Image (cartoon, rainbow, N blue to C red; front, side, top):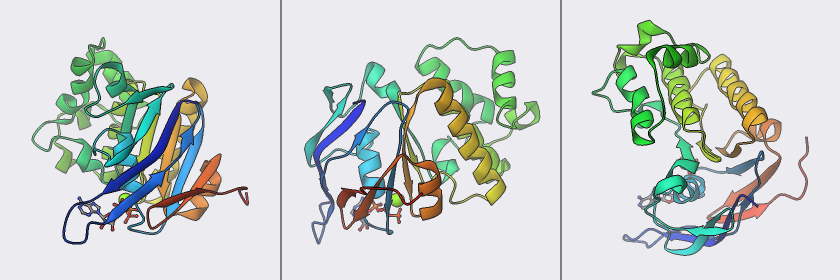
Length: 225
Ligand SMILES: Nc1ncnc2c1ncn2[C@@H]1O[C@H](COP(=O)(O)OP(=O)(O)OP(=O)(O)O)[C@@H](O)[C@H]1O
Ligand SMILES: [Mg+2]
């Protein structure tokens, strides 16, 4: 098993002490797409952010390749789990041009990068030189989400948490993003956790689905595909 959570729990402190995720046990294999499907506020993003190392669990464990991982993620673990957000602008520094935003992971992870290879790579995502010198606010939502995806995929993670990655986009861009993800997964065996309240998208995309209700994660026995 590539990734597993064991009784992962998040209680938000505050007036009501809400348990957003309650003892979630989910698993994910290489090359697999697992869906987290549930109503707004059921705890999907909270679980996704704990897995991505952005939110500290209250209790429980996360295992990657059988080894327990804890916040703050460091070294290869930090690289191996990435997250794509619903709002693409969340992924970028608004003050930097796209080229500066795109080259950031190359320096963080010491990856080789040339201007030509970056341009060539971006063209696979429908992005060209003209886009590189604009800031995020000067790009469309679809362009930004494709750039966010391109940036994540250069890092070659083992797991990507996709938190409603296409819900802000029109159907054509939505299909482009899902196709790019599928092609990449077929080639690299990357595993995806797809967070969505779109049932059709979940059934079309996922190998398995966890139903999420008030912080409780239950695997569906069979998909009605
Ligand atoms: N930082 C926070 N502090 C307190 N409560 C929070 C915080 N973040 C989320 N919550 C609460 O935790 C619960 C789960 O939120 P979460 O964002 O995980 O839901 P979700 O399933 O992703 O919903 P959506 O589909 O609307 O994105 C909600 O009741 C939410 O209000
Ligand atoms: Mg959410």
